[in-house]
Image 1 (cartoon, rainbow, N blue to C red):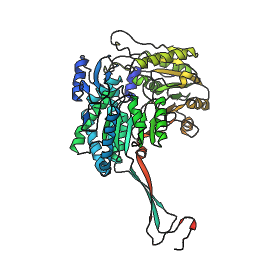
Image 2: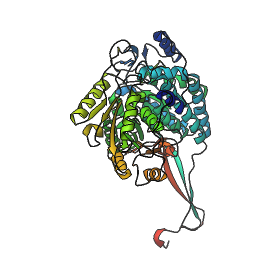
Image 3: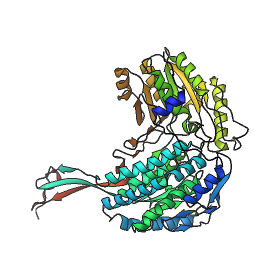
Image 4: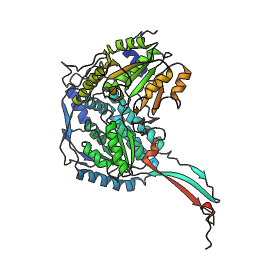
Length: 539
């Protein structure tokens, strides 16, 4: 039905406007030393910060090892309860002043943060790639997301609108307004170690909130780097100390934040298991949560699909970031009439995937984050086989020169059934499950037939199929795409999902409202006070 006139990844690169990266230095150690120096990363780094002021912390050191080569990059301290209390106290103090700054002035500070990130884009992108393992282009792309959300937030700072409403009472009027909510706690995950922080903080800051960030303990240096980058902006603008707090540590620090009634909003990104614990703890004190949890995302490839872009979209979604995106493509639901053709093309395409050092532009896929992730990947492959899955592209751990970290694995394809227990779960690894369908209603039911509801896509040139997929009777996900894969959320739209994905929304559209408290105001400009239900008092 179709022919690939170029190699698949050439087409893939063109489709996603990938630019040729600068040559990776042969001596990676020297290059990373320069990166760390540019970002002011020391051998041992602070456990936290309140902005300009860093502190050592009383907890044990967290060592950050690169999954790229298994080498120790640097270490950070971790926070005790006392350290956490000091950061929160400073944040509360800063909020009292920060909320009085006019929103456009707060937006100007964020604009300057965007400029500071532009200056350090190359260095921060390389650190993200080296510490987390995603390709350099993806690392640079993540930093670009940070810059983009800064631009978005600057415009937003002049658009924090409320409504004016007509009152049922004579000589009265009503309106609503949005006020800063206070201290926002941000718990981020390793797979997007810097972008998620910026999505939350830049919006929260223009809204008048202050933020306390707990970076992932699997990528703590990226958190240190971000704080170092914005320090010059904080200082130049005389921003109150405490609007940008950082607390490093393991899950116990997250527990402190979740149970703290001084933190009215906790934004947490990570696993469903983690999200449920955060949600229960915050709900117990009637606080607010913004949850961005797991995905089990599917692409439906219909009989009317453009198969060329379908294969490209599926490949990018399944193997990009070594399958460690929350929007990674986990399932491929293929119409029976094109099933064999898609299966053959995709299987062939996987032979072109080059796994290796993500800082080398010649490679497409880097490592998993750590050996625990590798073990989860191997367990998933064994489980799907035991449930009856048929392996089309064999997985496994790569060994030998260049794979010394033990974190490099082969992207795998398995024929499976949607009801398999392992297919119903999210495995953060490059495993793609493919399955067959007969009718569009069946395909949508399979797509929706999981507990997660983050991202979804349909490949079709049929208008009826596309519109059905986007309707109330279609995808039940927070993101539903047509002729584009499950990955690649844009800044301008609200990002998030339904069901066990958590229901949170961040980034674009009106996601800013979650960082504020809504207030309805009624004003009586008359000389009398009409009471509800016509009640009268003769006084």
